[in-house]
Length: 97
Image (cartoon, rainbow, N blue to C red; front, side, top):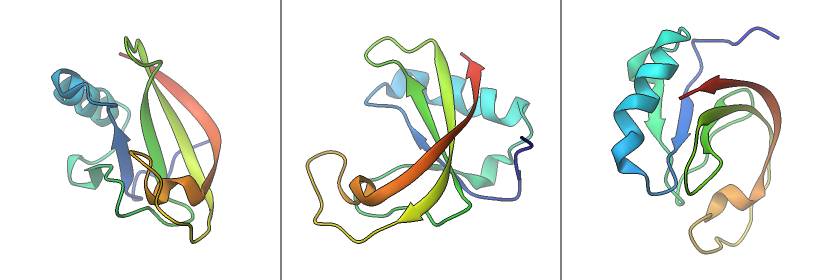
């Protein structure tokens, strides 16, 4: 499946701020525009068709899992996940870190 590089991609680093730049560089190398890469926050979720990029597997990730948002349902925010609890997604590809 090809990625739509015009979409926003929400980056989840699971607290590994030391890997933020390396993650952004990896996504840019796959064609994503730096200005479309947005740090994920628990209070704002993406929209259907946008992407999630998640460092995997915490706490010592060795790749980035790219997922496409397929559904967004309203939910009560929960912990660090927040509103993302209501987001359905499908795995698209992985990028080594």
